[in-house]
Length: 145
Image (cartoon, rainbow, N blue to C red; front, top):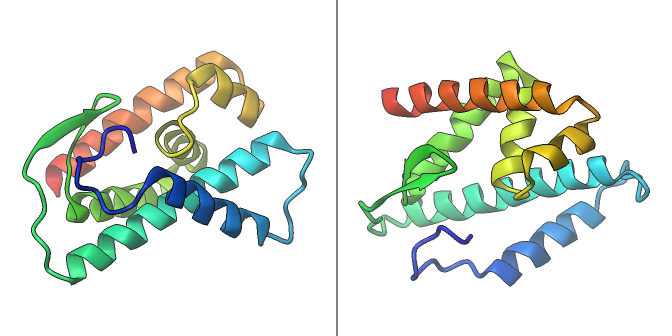
């Protein structure tokens, strides 16, 4: 939310509250498994933001043409672009589920690479490679869109 435009209609606290409600509804959630919790929380926040963007785009509200760099991936600050990012992440998940999970944890949960390695129980160099590959793949996919 830090990189969002000033007039963004979804407040950070509302996003966290909604994510918590959705996470707490999960029947399979093991409260002792931090990694599982963070992965589900990141996924829920992504869904909330994308749903919000889709509703705004459906209402035909104008979006900003300002471009920002989100951890080295250029993405326009608009509702359509967030929906495109979600679609691209879905395609990435089909190709490499772990790389898509790294992006989710980095973007939507705000974790650092060391924390992601710990959560996914994978060596840090593997996460660094996954991050680089996923980032390059997303840049190409979003440029084509």
